[in-house]
Length: 199
Ligand SMILES: Nc1ncnc2c1ncn2[C@@H]1O[C@H](COP(=O)(O)OS(=O)(=O)O)[C@@H](OP(=O)(O)O)[C@H]1O
Ligand SMILES: Nc1ncnc2c1ncn2[C@@H]1O[C@H](COP(=O)(O)OP(=O)(O)O)[C@@H](O)[C@H]1O
Image (cartoon, rainbow, N blue to C red):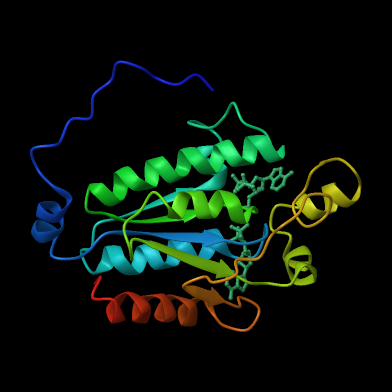
């Protein structure tokens, strides 16, 4: 990738701290990671609704949606996934700067890519949420019939089948979506953010 030259960083007139103070809550990224069908989108959206109902500034960045627009030039090779996650990390950083609690729902299978995103943020702003669900259960759910297609060889490089998923080693939260309900997952995340004085 070409490096930009002759550019200068401009400080903004209004700071992140001022936006947070006006909103009356903190801002962070809730970075969901897990296999396809593990429940990232479902839990991210349920949690976002929970925040919205309380008047908290929130936004969801979802894998499928972002790949329709901003990242429609990217496929599922390891390199393209890395670039996908790099861009989302930068977008999430803008949302956090805007005073928003942003939830992201991307498989983000590689530890190094997730850690690279973590390094963009200040302490406490990057909350990694591992949606831990056995592949058998994801495959049983198969909400988009993608596992079936991958098993038939109609999709290649499918995560968990012929492309790897690296479990987070020290996520802030782990949600076992085959053991807890969506409501319990929402409560677990809310309790975490309350304990950190984020909301
Ligand atoms: N080869 C392959 N592997 C995995 N997933 C695939 C693939 N091809 C298409 N899809 C669909 O794309 C969604 C994953 O996109 P992401 O941007 O989250 O992937 S990644 O983070 O870059 O790995 C994923 O969405 P989720 O099911 O919500 O995870 C799938 O619907
Ligand atoms: N406890 C649970 N948490 C999240 N999703 C669940 C749960 N139980 C069943 N599901 C179902 O599993 C599927 C998960 O799909 P989705 O949220 O699109 O996963 P992902 O975004 O990780 O691909 C949905 O059909 C959802 O209704």
